[in-house]
Image (cartoon, rainbow, N blue to C red; front, top):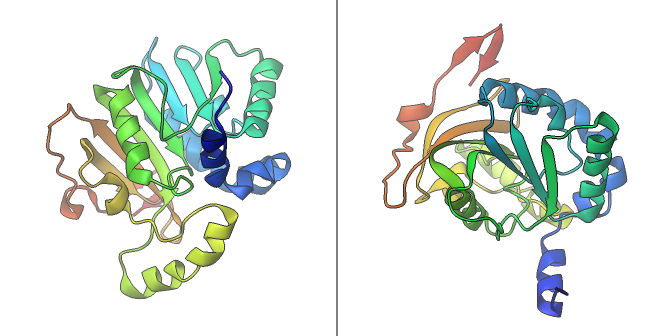
Length: 238
């Protein structure tokens, strides 16, 4: 079915320039900053055999190698150029556990309760309505399923938050928001945050690991419940 003009305008309105204009350079620019963190998070999920996994915003497929071949992974993205590069990875590695689709993160074309795991890395601040994206993730993830998000969230510390927030007009021109707070994205979404941390005290990015709840369940995502520090293999988590 051909997209209407309104659908095309909406799509282009929230395609990040980083994705749509620099897709051919994406791996060279971002692989060294993102890949290790993403791989560690995926491997830490302990994905079970025959599990169904959805990655929202799979991009060029920087994450793909980390997924175990004993699961089935569906990767979706709105940018065709990015998906084309991801498909090249699939073909070159002869991976049979990946299925790639062009799809909007805010309008996932899957039935309710479709996936055991849902992951999304460096995507939520790109879409114009992060809460809508999180509600879609909640909808397609099975109750009790696991959700893993990595993203930059604006600091709650007044000085740092203000400094980063001041960059928002610039970052929005590139297609992403520097002002998104974690509370904004997760508030009132039936998802229980089990852990959130940074892989380094100076990291700009927060890892969020969560359990999906049934509709109507009230999550307890208070900071006291899931903030703290830990140490794993010598890496400081904060």
